[in-house]
Length: 252
Ligand SMILES: NC(=O)c1ccc[n+]([C@@H]2O[C@H](COP(=O)([O-])OP(=O)(O)OC[C@H]3O[C@@H](n4cnc5c(N)ncnc54)[C@H](O)[C@@H]3O)[C@@H](O)[C@H]2O)c1
Image (cartoon, rainbow, N blue to C red; front, top):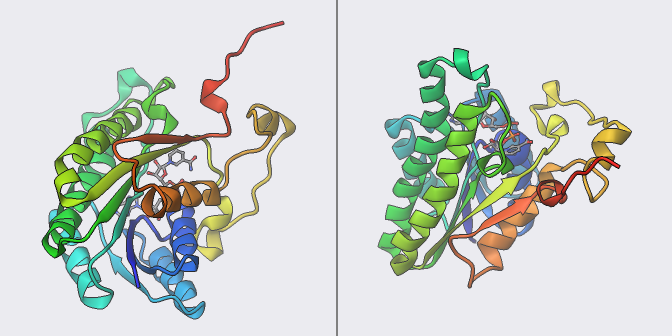
């Protein structure tokens, strides 16, 4: 049975991706800083018959990452796929953005992805089988929005880390790609006590060429494609945003 390791798999896009990979026959290891969400996600997965493991992990901490990866190998086996999904934003007007908030976002979103990739890739390389890493970036990496500098810089870093690692890890038969989501409504994929049904205005739907807002499953499907069905694809970014970022806007 193949093993997928997912950071931030307790809720949101990570939880939906965990469920999607389990359906595709994977054993799932979840790292999340939110214990209630991570435990609940792993419990639901086990109830559906999928081998699943959760470890409370702050991916910005080297020791936590080392413990999670070691426990994953012990409980489920060496990961075949790593999804670097955990992330958050701390937006503020640029002139007031505190350096400690900038550092905190970079520490999880970018440094955390580096730590998890290096720790898992060492295991993948040692077992001499192919592997795949999928990083979750954002359309913010390529299109600006005011007052999001910490988040935007972290996601731009993820895009660059992706093509860098794709070259460095190619000799070990590890492919590395990233997915850049547009707005994905994750309200219904939160810890069950916090989950809410998504509701979208006509404008929100019509703003996107495909006529709807993104769902976590849209990203999960892209991750599974890159992990399982894209043997000739590495170092790439796949934008999944319903066409939002290719659209020109003119006033008529
Ligand atoms: N939802 C969107 O519209 C959207 C758009 C573009 C990119 N993304 C990216 O997708 C990823 C998932 O976003 P989401 O909307 O599902 O978020 P979410 O907040 O619903 O879930 C993120 C999960 O990551 C965990 N997490 C945060 N920091 C962590 C840390 N240091 N260590 C371990 N776990 C940590 C949280 O506890 C949470 O369970 C993020 O990287 C985000 O930047 C989301």
